[in-house]
Image (tube, rainbow, N blue to C red):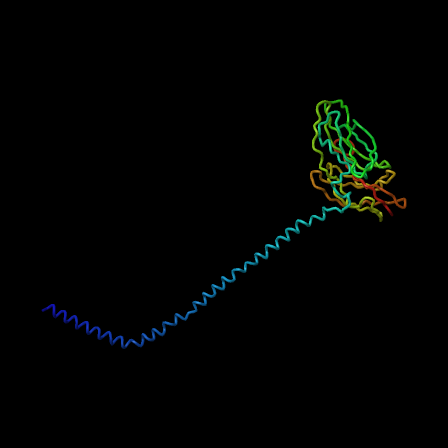
Length: 317
């Protein structure tokens, strides 16, 4: 009985609660409508607009084409740097300006070769420098150990000299200078080259490689047979000195008189050519005269010349 009453009371209370909630929903239905009206406003926020901005940012990423335009501009500057020094080391087409055209080239023996008697000297002379030719060996004290004078003649190519040399020395060994020179018809030295060797009284000869086949002096101006006027000779060229001693630059006429001279100094420790530019003033007692422009350097150990280069020019007032 009691259970029935409890169940009845529970049903009544549930019916009463549902009636109250219905009235509440009826009264609050209008505010919910306003709530639903306000809810669409957040959906109107421009979220897609921000998305499109991110897309446009991705489209601008290909602009690194700037880096592509910079890379080609670097290559021309590099090539320009490589080619700018070229004109300063490119002589004209005149053969005398070619460093490989060695006037007197000693092919054998090489520097500080150990030589016993007899040995062979091999050298080459350019056609325009042939004439009275001298082969000599000068001892360390300046005495003459060997000498031979003969004549070479102009050919279409370089003249080859192969001379067997016999010598005698009082000691077991001695440092000496082996030299070759040519003279023109006026007795002036046209070219002179030398190599320092070690002479031995006994034993077998031991040859070293020769010097590099490059002329020590390259004169760009004045050229061979050039005509110079105005009382001054402008001299431009390059030198690879034998030693640190002075290089003498001079003008020598056909009588052997020195018209003008100047001392030049270079660093022998440098292996490349060293540029120089200077001038030689001159005065003429005649209307015009031929003169040899000469560059020579003495040996710093054995008395006498070590090297000489020259060519003839015409001087006018």
